Length: 94
Image (cartoon, rainbow, N blue to C red; front, side, top):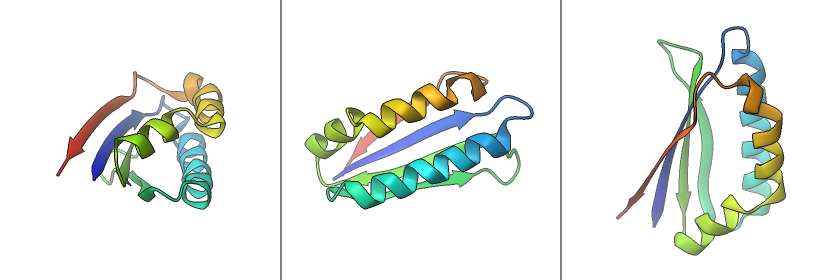
């Protein structure tokens, strides 16, 4: 299994927009990627500008597939100007 932690931070005033776009992306991923076993965004309680995606994939190939999807590319394009800092992505295996 491959686990991904992806941390996004919204610019002030863009928190709601980013949260909505993350929820939209999560729905698309769950509907289209059979080897993605979990994919959900979580808004931080203490700082609602921070959103963390918790992701679980069958294997590295499934994660590599996810990274190449057109809807992920579109998400990046739509949300790029809403981010206060670069996205932090960490990869884990069991």
